[in-house]
Image (cartoon, rainbow, N blue to C red):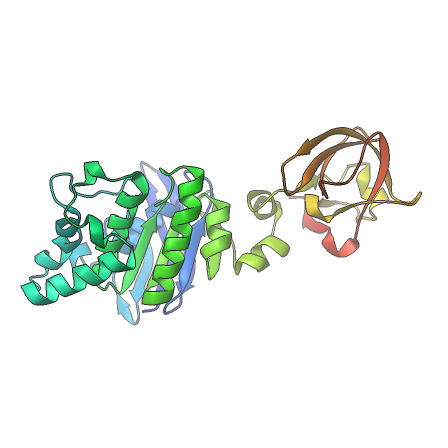
Length: 328
């Protein structure tokens, strides 16, 4: 199912939370809303789910205008960050809950619940209560409960934010497998760039209620539309037009500019920008260098862990890897 937002605006207490947002989620697409806390992304999700009416603009599911359609008539399913599963019900009954509300017959209900539990690898835990499960297992219950009702639109509201780093990586894999198996149209809200880069078909980066850029993960990372997007997605060395580096790197006057740490090349010749290695931190797969230039600016660079780097060095950045932005 295709979902379209046209100039959506939402205000709370005279504060504009969502400001004229438009985008389209294509059929079967995993679309991400990515941005810092308070930027309006969860408010958009709740308007799509029907919990908030937009103050202006239109929401379409396919060709149907949904502005005034109540939540229970939208055939959406939500996966929350706090799991939102019933503590007094077994795993099986938690997953079956939405089907019972829809009055699905017993044979069909059992078949669909069993299939959903198998997809999230919880068949053997069907009779357990949520208190007997780990956080990752509880989140898999929430995923099974969402997919079992066969929604037209699957909504994820920061579903992995309560899990530790290792579990987040594991659950990203679970969500990817479920997406491959079920092909739901999905909207995923998060502030975690790794989740977005690893799972999204496309990403809309938000800030202060507005969409900053929409694109594939690679487009967002390699071709950021502005300095905010560049700094929010991944790590970047970002400098103002007055930076002493502007001349050395041949940046046009008045341009803000930046480059990723992995694009910094340590020069083996006498060419390049002179700098002093202030620190070198070993992180297993890479060596993170802090370089202090003669203009007293700090540059982060990534080097091979086996590289013996210290003292004074020179570095270069290829012109095609330097991002330039209008200063305003």
